Structure formats: structure tokens, C-alpha cells
Length: 278
Image (tube, rainbow, N blue to C red; front, side, top):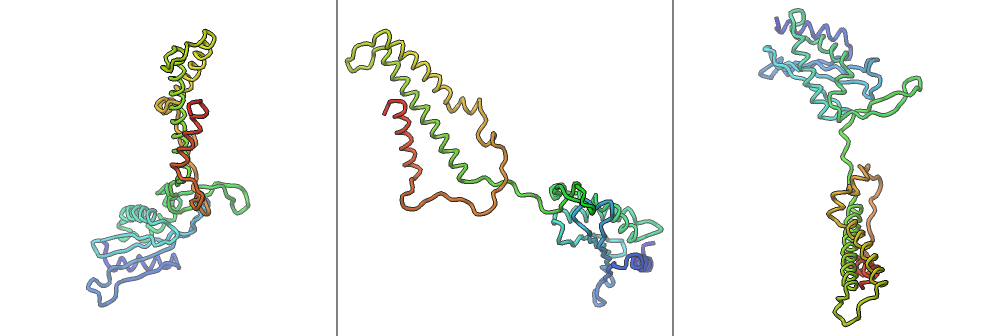
């Protein structure tokens, strides 16, 4: 029967088994005295869990009444809050299963269960599990696991995005310039410039026709729509980057700095010169 006498018996037995066990209860003036009654034990790392960089899991079993009304806390500064919550939930579930006739309050069996499942409890949230190559007590290489908050997603650098945007604009401008040059060549081939010049010789026509064909191929290759359909973006090719450490680099913005609009105009002029339409 889960009564106060049985609870005192179990707490006394647990204290004799684990010297580090801490016990507590409500103050005498409390309306619910002696409840809540609690027992807290910092369960030490067993040999089976030596691969983990956590050497104890403090578990606090709290009894709020004779019903019994139970709850669990895991007050550890080393463990992330989300992992503490999952461990507490798992321990509470196991505690309720250990409420038997032999141990009506299940204090001792629950602490034993925590020790047996030490490693399992630390892996309840895989986002908090960080594997790495380390060494054991004999300096032999082994897979180890650090426990900590989930890793932050990699941050994209602003200057990288801006550079990529400028590069795409440059490609688009080059494609437009090619198309303009192509149109001009076709007009020359057909002798329809409209400026009164004579038609070209057969040799010149053939040369310009070939030039127009080559330019047309380049223009199609640089088509933005086709690039998006046929090729992956630069970000997809590059994959995920790790966040940079140290101070973040900034572009110079003082006197003499070139604005984005000025660079765009200059780039357009260079492209037109390259294709002979300046």
C-alpha cells in the first residue's frame, strides 16, 4: 500500500544505498505537509556509457501526495533544456511502471533504471548529440559524443549573395548585348541597314552569317531561363557552408567607393564594347 510509512521506508533504504541521495519535504506550516516529498540523486556515468561526455544525470523524483501524484525534474546545467524535458518524461514513465506491491513508491527501482539506461537517456534527442573522434582512457581512438544545444544552421554571408546577384545581372546584360549584335549582323547580311550602304559581297555575307550563327549559339547558352532549367544555381553547386568565425568582412563604403548602380553602368558599357555595339 502506498502510504506515508511505506514512503519513509523506501526513502530510508534508498539513502542507505546511495549516500549522495538528497531528501526533502515541505515545511511544517505548509497546508500539504509533508508533501511535496522529493528525492534527488546524481546518477553517475556507468562503464557502458563512457563514450559520452556527461558524467552524471541528476534526477529528482517528486511526490506531491498519496494518490500518488508524481513528477520528475532533471536539474542539470550541462544538459540542454529540451533534453532535460525528454529525460524527465522517460523517467516518469518508467517510475510509474515500478510502482509495485514490493515497492509501492518505486524509489529505488527507478534510480536503478536511470543508471541502467544512462546512455539511452542521453540519446533521446539526437539534435543535442554531437559525435566526434576522441580517445578513451588508454589513448586509443574512439567515437565519442558531446551533449549540447542543437547546432545553429549555417549563416549565409551577405556579400556572397550580393556578389552572386551582380554576377547574374552581368550574365543577363551580356546575353542582351549578344542579341543586339546578332540582330545587327542579320540586318547587314540582308542588306537592310537603312543607311544607304550597298549590299555586302558574297564573302562578307558568308563571314557575317557564320558570325551570327556563333553569336546566336552563345546568346542561347546565356539565356537566363534556360540557365535556370538546365543548370543548378551557384548555391546548389557550392553546397552548405559552415558559418565563418571571427569578424565579418565588410565592403568599403567610404569616399571613392563605387556604388552598385555605377558598377552596373560601367559593366553595361564594357559588354557593349566587347560586342561592338557601343
